[in-house]
Image 1: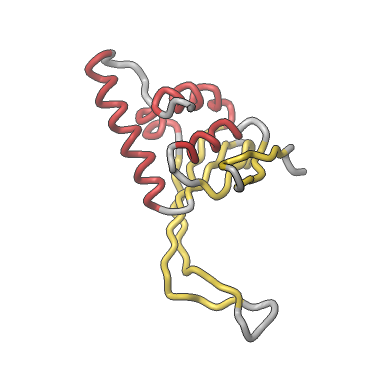
Image 2 (image 1 turned 60 degrees about the vertical axis):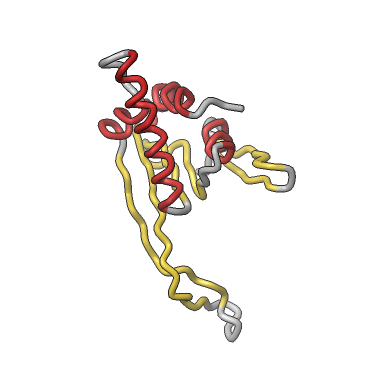
Length: 142
């Protein structure tokens, strides 16, 4: 059974469908110019967020690390998004070749020789509240 989805306005002429309950996170990623391409509020008991390009994942981590360094000086021992990512989440790296529609076959595709690296972030669904609190500390909404 699918999850209830809501339409999310990313900018003036770009809308996407996302699972209800995760739309504030996805919208905020786009606000910070970090693109995600898939997400799920409950994928086998986990929240799952996929980053379309390795560079988006790297930017996300870099900002989380800067926040940790900043917070460590002010409040040693306070959990940060960086700590959460290190200790409570898992990451899957998926790589493939970019495919395009085959002009000679209606149902076929052909490889382009371009490498695509996607990163999937997963953490237990019951930690969603904790993730959101730490996420919005690093990535305040507009």
